[in-house]
Image (cartoon, rainbow, N blue to C red; front, side, top):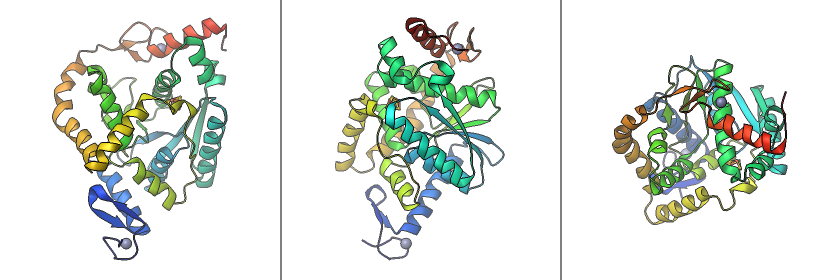
Length: 306
Ligand code: SF4
Ligand code: ZN
Ligand code: ZN
């Protein structure tokens, strides 16, 4: 297998692009694809102050690495979830990455700031860990960005993540989630900060190749709670279709964004947002779902926070 650009031995083959690249030309290709996604979706400019959600995995570290190399003003935000060794290793990889690059990093420890780890939260409220965890991560990223005056929140979601979420939303016809599914959600001009996913055109394998070829030291282990999660089932289903028909995932997402989502923006306007009585963040009800969930959990477990 030869590199499409220089004909030297290829390091990676990309069937959906009908191409193969050597290390150096693959890294150029990766940067070019990410740059194109940022430009096409008008995600941000060099003037923006970007808060990057960093878990310590290949996606978020590849994204942060890209933004730092291109001279964007970034700060990483790591949320310590308290999920045993997985969280300790994720924290270690994130801090090592930030220290090596002298990059600014904020860490929010759930137990210290909100009174509980994810395992305790999910046991207390009898909800699957990913549901409380996903809600908490989205909320904290937005709240920290708003409180600290960042203009954009950037997340490392890749194409496989986006396609699996889209499939899950379609299978349940979750119209409100579909209306909000976008690689670039603008700010509401108030306390909802613009949220972008610059890696949404790159597959999990392509991002992993970038991380490995660049020598990024990321956490390889998966969160123990991801075993059996429906997102994994959707990814497997999409993988088997992609294998027979390369390009399916990309078409699934791009056709949705081009043909379906514009029709759904109308339904998004139906949601009248107000401020949460408790924390002031945007919500459709009196108290936001984050405050409701955490208040209920702390009350049940008899935990108070300062
Ligand atoms: Fe959180 Fe679930 Fe992801 Fe684990 S797999 S980090 S519990 S969302
Ligand atoms: Zn080459
Ligand atoms: Zn609230």
